[in-house]
Length: 313
DNA sequence: GTCTACCTGCCC
DNA sequence: GGGCAGGTAGAC
Image 1 (cartoon, rainbow, N blue to C red):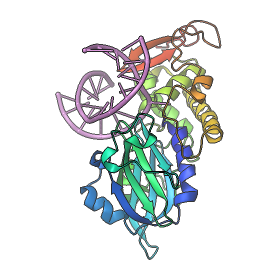
Image 2: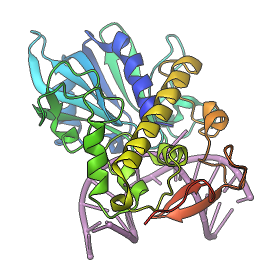
Image 3: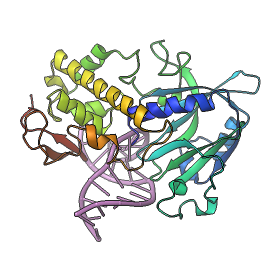
């Protein structure tokens, strides 16, 4: 569920309801959700309680808020979040009974708050929940550093500062400052399979397993084509295809879901309707009619059309 | 570079 | 019970 388009939908949904607000309380229900926090819960509480949220930015699938102290001065830290494979950030519905903390992981399967791990209480009375079944996501603070190229650090960032914890993450394809020809050249210097390169967040961020398969299908390129075998034209074509499919998904995500609600059932919703390759093993290619294949490549599923997607070496 | 671990739950 | 799941980081 949280691929780049959905993280961007979450970012846009968070902005109007969190910017200018002050955090009054951090409610921690499962300490594993803050395992990346240096100094643990005490440090997180000290950094957040009484701090105001002044911007919400995103690079790839990493989200963060900028923090200000009660005088309005930047604290020099960001509150970072990552949704992992199953995370959701959403506001508690006013008046709805909250799951008891002691029963946080024991409620009925239909209870969406069964996996509530942490909540931020805001000064307007709102409660923002981090819900995450598999606990691969997290929330933690990170000091701000200058972005290498001096451009705005990320989508939604007010300046060139970005959290140290996201400094190793490349720009994503929805970032206006992303340099596609330069990314294409970077792909072409590596001998690894092009899909591995697309999933490498230090080369280009935000592309996950679904959109890698979709982009490669759209660009008629097989997953195991070495980066060094790509022409500049083909490499750029793959990146443009990846951007286009994520933009389309963002449009759908922005219209068919609540801004802060991400459906837990990954196989329903718009994916089932608009994916051309991912999860379509054994179904006909919509371009040529051949049956799509699924192979395990480096421990993950890859879906491709054996006719349209030829391997180049 | 590639493999494995981190987690929980669902589907076969 | 085994396989699989949209991610990432750390280990070899």
